[in-house]
Image (cartoon, rainbow, N blue to C red; front, top):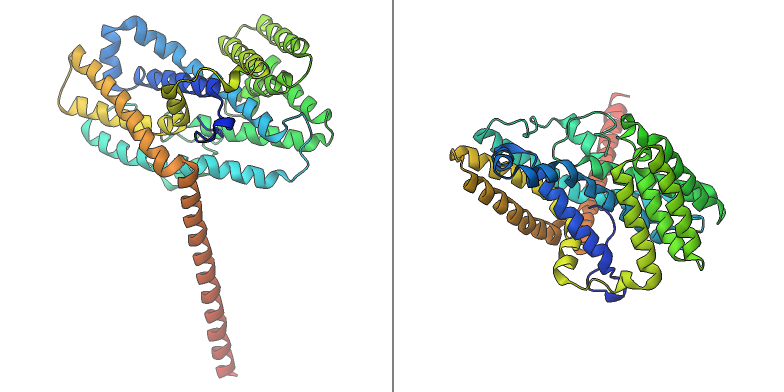
Length: 381
């Protein structure tokens, strides 16, 4: 999912526990979508009703893991010691926007192409309607959710919410001005989310709906740096239990468990040491790329399943297994070519060159037009 991950080559910056959380949560979301869309899922549900039903109902809860981790890492990067943000937030927001949008738009382009192909092979509600320019612009500005624009791929609401959450936390830390005020604003808004906004699903296109989980992640980072860890963890636990007593929400309970685990593991040093498993580290690193590309792959495999008129349980299960494996493979390539820091630098440099070239061209055109206009005017005079 979309947040800054530690560089794999830099062992001192690695957090194996976060890698593991990301790997497991991203796979659950992938399996949730495999159990939700297309004829492959429909056939598999007839054969494995319990497991497919569980993934359909509860797999989406893994999003809470990413919300908490995102808040945890945002606090680490913006306010490691609970201090106010003194520099301008605008460059930070622009950097975050580019970090999210460059791979996001590449994945949207892939989704548009795959949707067009799959639409030739099958007629299914999972296939988005043909994209329009306005729809693409809404996605490019991350406003598709708040504008009520139909999504061009599954789960893309999260990308917009991630940016909103980061922006809200950045602005709160910047508005705080003082060390104790800044984190207090973040925690205050998190409380408002837990006890009010998160109870009303009409807010689910806005960051405030999810800020309770995000704030728990930030609180976990700040708590784990304090000398009296038990007191801070006690406050987090008490507030969260009170919110659950008011209205039990499994998603908040999951967020609480993840936040407490991160706080305890950072304090004890487990965060940087355990579990040291390369497959989990790898899947954690490419989790955002897999998240972005898996739905277009799912549309194509469902389309092929329909095109060849397959309907057996075995073919559906093999099709889902192939979709899962191909999604990981394509996600790995997508990470290497689009999402990785090196690829992002190349893409941003190319975009900057194109922008400068266009600007220089428009300036030259303007100068030539001005000179021509002067000649015409002087010639008439």
